[in-house]
Length: 186
Image 1 (cartoon, rainbow, N blue to C red):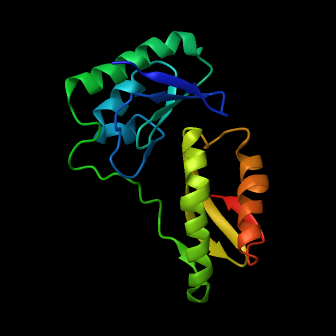
Image 2: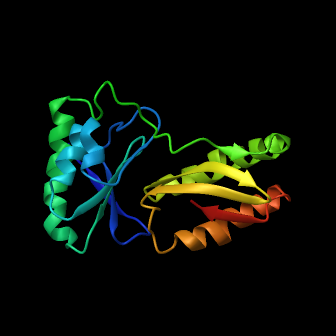
């Protein structure tokens, strides 16, 4: 088994591509070893010294580290991923869902049509680009011209995430949806 690695815009995060489906649908974001109880792979990865966060996408895994050097961590991470996929065991336990419910979406009923357009733009234009960088972005709400988004994976805590939000996503949404005045991360 050959596992590719890719740098992400976040220097503390590496993207691992096992060449197999990691999660058939949805995503999972683990910010601590305690949150990883439903994933044997996440538990194993958190056992590697220096690992601070793990994100599972459709066909990739991102690992965020502390100030430990990648050269010390990468062999253990690659070994854990390889062992997981070679064992044939599931990445997530059967009782665990995939996408995390970070709360209900919020918007006024009168904004439903606008929200539909915003969500479509995020799904078709933004999420694929963000996934390329090892992260995910989801719609959380729209109120008084402000779009609220949740950034996860490599995007959470990335130094360039503010620029991505303000110059990329905000400009895109404002171009197609005049009601959008601002985009904020929550």
